[in-house]
Length: 269
Ligand SMILES: NC(=O)c1ccc[n+]([C@@H]2O[C@H](COP(=O)([O-])OP(=O)(O)OC[C@H]3O[C@@H](n4cnc5c(N)ncnc54)[C@H](OP(=O)(O)O)[C@@H]3O)[C@@H](O)[C@H]2O)c1
Image (cartoon, rainbow, N blue to C red):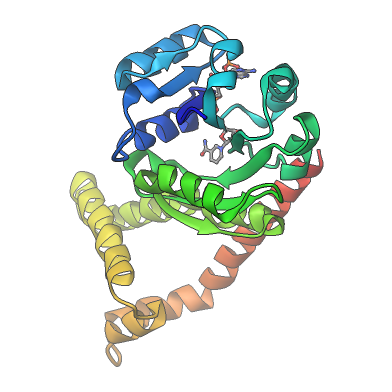
């Protein structure tokens, strides 16, 4: 079996996947085949990473062991229909389409095909993403590890049972939006207390990066680090009191729960 990798859909997330995967040791650009209905998008991506631009699905699907699908959820039905006759059960089909279940993809392809569902987020573009991964019943541990290995340069992979994929969408797929809003608000607050916007922006972004790295590199709980910077009757204590009074935690939790519900609604059509 060929170890070629196919990517169908060369938009924002598809491109991030392909660009990340070529950073993997042992994967050469000419082993990645890319295809998109939008010829310019396909050719641009192929030229940028030196991959092979497939003329059509027949030039990609039969030759690839791993096929990554990165089209919008509304486009997947037609795509799977077109792929069915050329897909074999020993191929691994990994989809990032939000809300499209493993069962649905399996039902559109030949029996036995290995199906994996992924929920990435946009920091994958920088190799700092989070990718939730769920596997269908036909996928064995070895095959799951192969895909995790391919995705390794894009960031952190987290295995989740499929019933938690909507939650992964609410927490992590949508997560960058919460962080961007937090950063934007902090910058505005910096301006409100007299700091120039460009300087406030630099300070806030570095603050978020630094704080996140303290959590990633330490094994400490966020509450422990927060307590360590909160002196009695100090500035942090005063600020945290305002956040508690204004339901900061409850508001954020409700946002994640609402995003999860919305992902469920979209999945149910
Ligand atoms: N963006 C995110 O933050 C994010 C996060 C997690 C998951 N996702 C998932 O990632 C997937 C892709 O999102 P995106 O933002 O990258 O979308 P996108 O930028 O619209 O890219 C999708 C590409 O697929 C092409 N396409 C559509 N049908 C096709 C077909 N049958 N064969 C080949 N190519 C086809 C589209 O061409 P046309 O434009 O000509 O239709 C478009 O170029 C979605 O399913 C989304 O749910 C996205």
